[in-house]
Image (tube, rainbow, N blue to C red):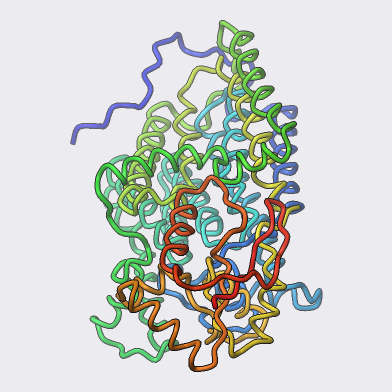
Length: 529
């Protein structure tokens, strides 16, 4: 079978090594450990206070011990539940404990990436720069400070690759079995990691020095259908092949995992979210700049630093203190395999309408491919990593940690105090899941979607929606909504929803009954009369 060509073709003289193979200078090791420690402490100290609806739902499941086995990420809640039990003597708040778990997992990802980079390049400056660039990307920082399901499975996938590279070097089976086990475990934490598993399987078939090695790598994956089979009992589902398929593929069959969009839309969102995987770009960015104009210095200084580093980059490669820990042919095999993994993940994210959440692993994979870059790029890459970190702190982590974007607690208090009021809320899932976390009850009958979502859910016409709302008023229910007025960030979807809501509620007389201050301006609770 013809071998895939390498992603980078560097025609240069063989490197000259100044020390024995496999050595790493103490200074380089200290720098890498210091970088990992500093970044891990940052995410531990800056957890978001603006968690998503899904994050509150997972925290509620862990806190109350229900819905622990969800099909799209079977073991994520179960691992969180065990983690919370482990921390039991400390009596932590459930969501804070889960945020800390993801922050620690992020540190573990960087440790695994360090091991991979050491095996693929002996250029210490380039290795440190790539480690920093991946660690400072917004995709990793965002989910390291949030209770979402993407960092824990990435942790297992990265360490599966570490074991896989050990198999390439030693041609022994235990590392290969470990790689297969870790990659399968990653799939149980989130199904999107099947792309990483598949890439390593193909890489094993193409590049393993042992005949039939693919079977050894694939064998632990039998645990995946077994785990789903056992989970059927948890949900009291029949143990039949059809039931197993419906449960395992639930989020794909229902569209909850994303669905194919038109090609232009998928391409546009994919490109946009690849950018957002590295740098925070959101409707809040311009709003932050309007409120805090001094933040404009962050991109200016960052770009200036990258330009200065580019102009001051060395013209000749650094003298390598050691070669990569793998022979050149195996280094090429590792790059090709992880390039395939990256293409699989990117393709799946594009299929899911450019879902940014399915791109969290791209910075790690890109760092592995860029080990083929000349070591003269170390200084510009380091400057770019510093610029990314400054941007993502200024427009992402720090605002998410310090500022309250929604000020939801007073609204939730009203929801609990007024069972006869129908609350038509802009982000009703966030409200429902926070109430679920507070009370342990899944669902709140007086919380309804925003008018346009309510109309779409029941397939009503605008006239039918208004008739239903009037009927609720005649039945003694008060109607309140937060979709009218309030801060409007540069978010096309939110702007469209607001305009649609105002049109659908034409004929009602709005009367503001309460105001909830947020950093971006007040949100209003409005009665419909």
